[in-house]
Length: 461
Image (cartoon, rainbow, N blue to C red):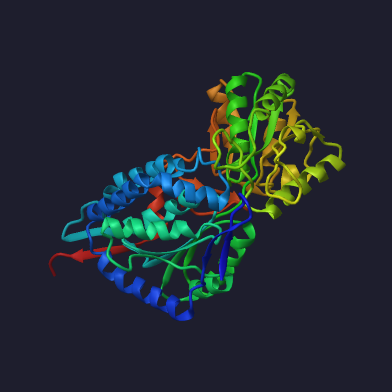
């Protein structure tokens, strides 16, 4: 039995039986059979179905958003917008470019020959999606895989089982042929067995570094590829020429939104010493304005973390930093809902931090951020790169040339100037180092879900 414990009040919000071996076998068999027909459906028809799925989910986003709040604790004021904004934008973009990007690739003419490269689907794609942004993390693989002519089996995190079920409802309502999209509620051991099954053609995983290693171990027994979007410890650098008001507003939001439970959340900030005090003062004042409480209530801007153990990990990071000389700038008493032994955690800003502390090196995944002064660009670059992660990094400046120069030096998948914590579907979403490998979205986002097949036709003998 798989249980979803709501972080709001500790109640059991959902219970699901794990799939039996026979159910798994039936799902994989149906997926393989359905894909043989689906691959022959024109891309324009595939896109039309995906757009109808998107429309159905957006139309039901209020109800789905409330379900999501109960499952993960995000304030109800924000939950529906995961579908209305990011999900909506990504589906629209990938559907718009699908026909062009999935078309045959012509080769320069050669007398008496016709030559081209066709992008063939890989078969059945197993999508392993997390709980923190279950719609946004899953759509990056689910929709491009289906657009490319594959079938999909979705395994969602046990914290958000209703997301998988809502996908199935939406695809059914949109008229997707049976078997092209399915889901399974399975545990880690069952996931490994599914990956080893010969009917799986690709694995798209979003989650922890440890989870990525487990996926890779299972896949290593077969000649299939994996896409791995893993952890992050995303840095920001504020130069002295930055618009401080905008930097403060965006970086605090980037650190605190969704209780900091985002792979691309801002977890460490480096500020030029000339503007350090002013930046910190503004960040503290803005953070104090957050309201921690029951995420179903109006006015709440910070909900509980997903589980008590996640909040305890963040408390341990804070305590370790304080023991090494860090200074906590947010008085926890300002957030009376914050209590040890619960998932409710006050936001925190730490100064006097350095890279000997977990809060500056390990993924805290909480509404906690450390801020360090730096003397120049070179020191900022060195510290930003001093991490085993490399998902996103942001620079705050009015100098575009400086941004391009610094961006060239940063080891990251996405480099921002004057924004953060956002995924543009026209750009490749990728990580380096322990943040993973492969990419989703953009015109490159179909590559993982297709394989090239060359056609070399001699027209007459």
